[in-house]
Image (cartoon, rainbow, N blue to C red; front, side, top):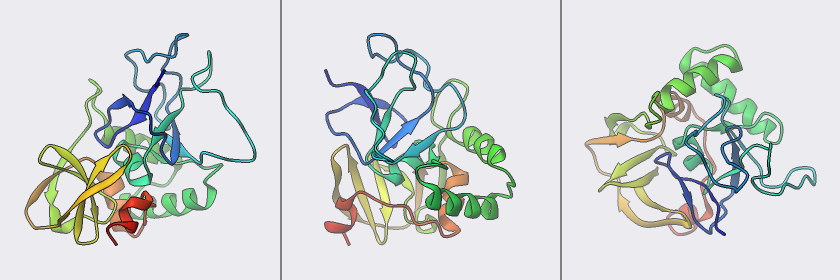
Length: 205
């Protein structure tokens, strides 16, 4: 059975066979039959982890254990409202925190998590979206183009699919609907360079 554990840039959690390059945690979201309930988070500390760390192994969606979520890459995880884990991704985490503080005026990790939670979802579980000039967005931000998520990367917009990026389009000017939370966009603009799926740079340098 294909589990419903793949997170899209739009914030939806879907069932797809592709595993992704990062794993995430929002708490226990599944039941004894490995199916998601209505909840989409249990705490505000939404992190992304390496798929492999110190030889640890997990069986997916076990009773009483957190729900393992997966992302194509770091820009996708950012669009969905996650940040780097402070244990398995320590160097990346430290850089993210430093630039987040500088860009958003926070001083503690608790403040980061509170601000990110405010910026990513409403109380009705809808993704918070913003409008911004396309030419002002940093690499790594996600937008909607023709109702489909696209990654802003260099002078291109790369169409997202669960298996990788396709259909590179030129990045033009004008207003765009931004999926990546505002505080994370500010962190990207401050100099954080997210790691994209290889298809972003292999096919569309």
